[in-house]
Image (cartoon, rainbow, N blue to C red):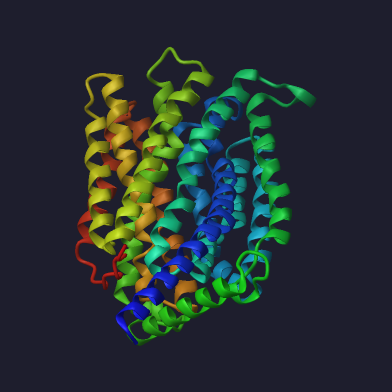
Length: 441
């Protein structure tokens, strides 16, 4: 082959790749991004409901934090089974099922009447939602080559922050509007109104998604489809040579356990901030519910920027480990700094930078396990890491509530949350993974 012919072939290959990725970003990443926004609204609206719900049904700060964390017990228990079922029945059917189920349960949160019913519904919501995040992460591996996966994952994960940017003002507005239809109060209608989209979009998902490129006749043309199938198969064979394929391998590979602990410590900060930030902002004083929603949204704008910028640079360089470690360290340091801020404004700035860091981890982190896991090991491994790491999701909100009740201050609680990402950063420096080939253009 002549140099000119080889160059032409490379240009053609790159042109097809760009065309494929452009279509998949709109048809898969953007759609899953919308699903995750709905998911996160249903998961974290309890933080806004708590502004009035806690008093109405008699919840202490500790009880609220415990219930917020109990969600993750159900989530952890059903995470791996959910992903293994999805691998068998297909993403289209299973993701649709998850959405409809969590929508119904989330709407049912409107009818909790005390501590025990609150705990029960939070546990049930965890069971209902289990498998959605690792399911989508696995689904992305069916469609996106490794060198483009961090950016695709970050596009999906950006929903975790933009859902708050969108949902916080909406939740604040619903509470401020104070609807009292049919004898229900505002926080009850908050749960009901924000649950309806999950059920409706879940039904639509059943008809929209395509499980794998081999089954696609709508999203890609024949040339693009064949190129993508060949590219994914080539990567699959490479990973099989150096990594783990069977489900049982995830329990033997120390890197899976290490990544689980890393994600767990970062999750402490993520969920601690998400589920308590409305009350932290409200404690500043002088803000209405709607104003609290607007201020609460600000850090999550920075979180979205961090997700996109860090993932984009990671895909460009092919480096994953140090991007993850630096982002976590940045988040932990500034979360600690927010605890000692001399003014509310400086505290908010510190939390914004902290959010940039701890959420940036979410995009690039998920490119690490798929560098050595494939097949059943990838399905089980992604669910294992995401599921058991949610212990941090339980610990973060609960510790904040317990410390807040014990000290009547958010300062030691913020310092406790800050320790999580810092430990995650240190652990991340010890993991050994291969470098993804960097983009050549």
